[in-house]
Every structure is written in C-alpha cells, then in structure tokens.
Image 1 (spheres, rainbow, N blue to C red):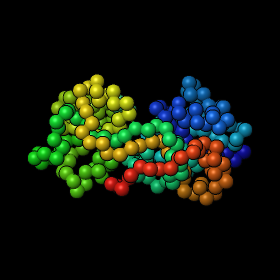
Image 2: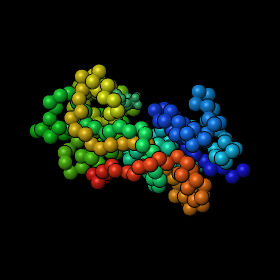
Image 3: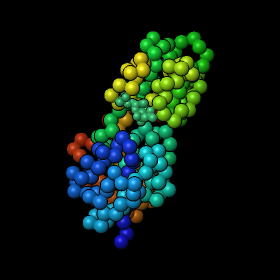
Image 4: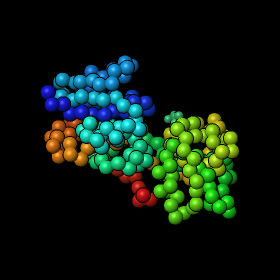
Amino acid sequence: MDYLTVALAKGRLAKDTLERLRAADMAAAIDMDSRKLVFRDEKDGIEYLLVKPVDVVTYVEKGVADIGVVGKDIILEQNLDVYELLDLQFGKCAFAIAGFPNTDLYGPEKVLKIATKFPHITRKYFAGKREIETIYLNGSVELAPLMNMSDCIVDLVETGSTLKENGLVVLEKMFDIQAKLIGNRASYQFSYDKIQTFIKAVEREGTVDATDYSWQ
Ligand code: PRP
C-alpha cells in the first residue's frame, strides 16, 4: 500500500496530538507507551513515525515524512523549507525573555548574555536592537541566570511554574506559539488529495493563525 507518512512529535505534544487524531477516528494503531517507532494504520492508509520534536521538521523537509505535527518554536529555530499547513490550536505557550526581577535588558552593559535552547530565534529577535551573546544549552536553561552564567534566558513559558519555582519572571514577552501541521513541498503536490483528507479530519473551527511573526 502507498501510505501517507506522518511524523509525530513525542513528548509534550504527544497527548494532545493523539487526542486530536482519535477524535477523528484515526491512529487506533498508535501505542505511545511502547518503544515502537513506526505504526501502520491500514484503515486510513497512514504510516505514523514517532520522533523527537526537534527531528520532525527534518523528516518532513527530507521527504521521509509527507507531513508532521510539531511546535512553531522548532519550525522557527530550524528555519527549514517546509509548508505550514494548519494551526492545531494546542501546545499553546509563549516565547519570553526571562530573568531576575528588575533585570535591565536594555541597560548600559555592552553585551547581554542570554542562555537559550533557541539561539537562532534569539539572535533574530535582538538583531538591530541590542548586542547579545547567546549561550546554547540543551535544557533547564533557568539554571543559567541562577548560577550567574547569563543575564537572562530566552525560553518557552507555558504555565510559568518553572520560572516561579526558580525566582525568575518574564521580562519581555516575545510572541505566541502553538502546534502546527507541516508538509513537505513535493508531497503537497503529489499527495495533495491524501493530505487534504488528513487536514479536513483534524482541523477545528477557527484554526486561523493570528500570531504576529512580523519581527522575523
Ligand atoms: C520547557 C521550557 C521551560 C518549561 C516551561 O522545558 O524550556 O523550561 O518547559 O514550562 P512551564 O512554564 O509550564 O513551567 P521542558 O519541560 O521541555 O524541559 P527542558 O527544560 O529540559 O527543556
């Protein structure tokens, strides 16, 4: 069978993604608790790949997956050539600059040191506004200002509890983020009907992107 291949992000988005698919009577074959990475759904002719969130865009850009579900944060950071097909209205959070209260982001220090998992987004955001140095970390970035390794962080904020529990606050909100359905450019042409069927099954009313990305 000629399957439509769909890359799904494991981790934070997995539960909401699966809920959305199940609500559309899809993805019965997927077992998130197993260690299996490929699930085939013969009923819908769909093959699901479970991959790390940071790898979803790569699988789609390379055409290994025709479409994928991933956070806008990762799409922006990786800046790869894929179509954004649909806002999924879950995985909502915000990018923010955070640090100790009263940190002066635009103060007299020549260079602002920023710890982040998102150096590309951070550099773009500050371009022309402020001289910065990014310190790349793979996680738990809130630790960097606590240990005086950076002046602040750029990170995702969802409930705000990680910041609060570490005595940090949002200093400047940057922009909102949510989960997106993305597509490979060639697949969008050659598997157009299958992709449209998938979109119709998972879309909800009001899935319009109202986010302002004009800073890019
Ligand atoms: C994310 C993000 C923050 C935290 C925000 O990290 O980088 O640290 O969640 O969520 P909150 O506002 O609800 O507290 P994640 O849990 O993915 O782990 P990481 O720090 O290891 O990257």
